[in-house]
Length: 202
Ligand code: SAH
Image (cartoon, rainbow, N blue to C red; front, side, top):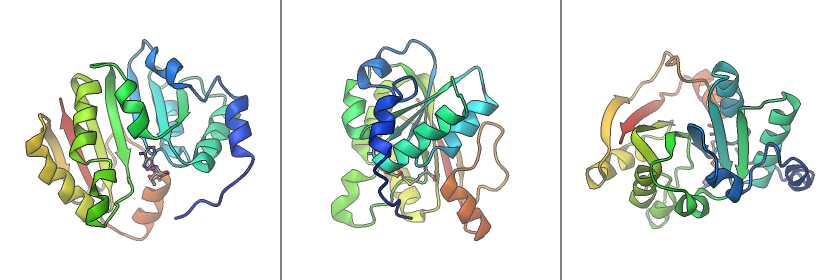
């Protein structure tokens, strides 16, 4: 599902600093943080923020069009507890302090099926170790994917990390109360495809 480039998005992001955070603003946040990496067009981010108004949700999205579409959704819905950053997670994570994030959500991350691209997968060991560092003790990564290969790859990497698996399903059906559907998930569920889900704890 390619998103067609939309030229209005970059100026829109720049005009809405109250929703689209800079790295400096992000690293100085002082409240509990739910971080969604690869937030796409932002449905999960916005709906979780609506369902849990006393928690902060921050989306990280590197695609400018997706980031701009999300930003507009958050502005139009006057969301105060959902923010967005237009940035590549690989550039942001090294700047985040240790033990500050409550949850990391990875929803339908790009599978990067070629072996030579394995390091780009958001559950490659380097990424998992960065999440481990930035998560608080007891903090969690919550992963959903339709890609069995990415799910297996993630499980294979876990022994090289300090995460504990606290939930694992190869056919995640009824939504957990602390969850909502993403754009990709809606279409995969309509097609009847299985959804893989993992929860890892620090
Ligand atoms: N979570 C959404 C979108 C899934 S597609 C959904 O479930 O519908 C994966 C998204 O992750 C894309 O929008 C892509 O631009 C973004 N992405 C991939 N790698 C990223 C990275 N390193 N940093 C930030 N965003 C990334």
